Length: 292
Length: 305
Image (cartoon, rainbow over all chains, first blue to last red; front, side, top):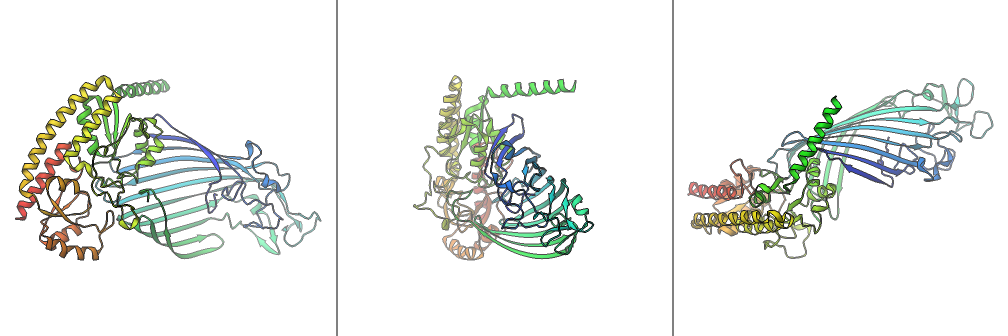
């Protein structure tokens, strides 16, 4: 929904700390909806048929005015959030939130009209840390987040060269033998992740994470279509997928970490994958705990 | 009907908030500062300490509830020697409270007027570990510094709440008199121990040791904030044994295994010495901290002999 780099387009945010006895904060963000870090909105700044082809073809198509920038309020992306936190005890803290993001996307052919995306999320974090911790350890943290996206895709006529005949590089409707005409429709995708981290001794954190994404089968996925002669069925980008990842992280210093992670990845229509990742990360310069 | 009840209880809650605000709302980062603020402020102040005495004050979780607490504060007491630099700045920035920012009279640096020890030779860099550039921030663990802090707080409270200034001055006098008397008692009790060699876990007992004449000959940590490595411990043991270390001092929250190993290896006694008020349930105020710590050290040394 947010792509590999997250939703971090330029913008501004206004937040209000509510006068409640507990922590409770409303915030409202406004961002440019166009750009690579606005995946799900007006990302990938070119239309289908241009020189650069977007990943995810054959279903990636965008109207050509995606590059229009921000001309009016309708080109902005709005993200409200409400967060609340309670201290359950001397050792336990709960933080919960509901968020949403609303903005235009550019999905569809020329004349598809304005199409938009709505994303809704809920999140919950629970943390336990004993009152006699040393160096911030030990701790247990459980974090989970669920999201639902309603993505309004505009209609698209694949007969891009206008010759009313099936050509290579066009999506073909098998019944008519002609370039497909995809209906405008709302695509619904959803998923969640849940992870538990256990900092068992200073600098060492063991974790287990579960990810799940799925979608409602859309009208375009029910059509009998081919692309360059190959049958096209369920959109691989929207198929059900889940992943289980145990991991172990070692922080030799506050500036570096070494993480070993195994992923069991199961994707509908593709199968299962096993992968092992070794991640090294280090930081130079000032950081939170010290100014040097 | 339900709505009415809700509105009524909200109104009550607001009223209660205003009633409380008649007192100075003081938020202390560490319980030691909070304890002194309570002694000087008395009934005129409401004191909240963010860190608990049992916690590692360098690594306090920035709980969202602390943002709300800081938002309501009239006064923030922080050390001013960067001990809280890992968790406090983000909380203060989010609290949106001009009363506790920058040069505002409600923003109090407790180290003001105190000569910090262990100020590193410039320039400081990461090879020194979590060293504090402003100097050793554990200054509240010297009762003589308690006098400077209390005097400073009485000034601040009087400035912010001049109508009650006479009360703060009277409370201050009582606190200083009691502290003078107590300090004399502790000094007398510790006098036979002068020159005793000790090993500490972290550089957190330097002020206490220098006040009472203990001589620190080594640390379990190779550098401040860095976990002990086997090579450091193997080098430390013969060195502190030769120096004649009699005690190993650690805070209640430190891992016991390595300090116990060192103590056994050098024939010293491991002793738990809380560094802050609230370090255990017996330590209820600033005097209680030194009453307890002095008694622990004397008892441990007796057993050791």
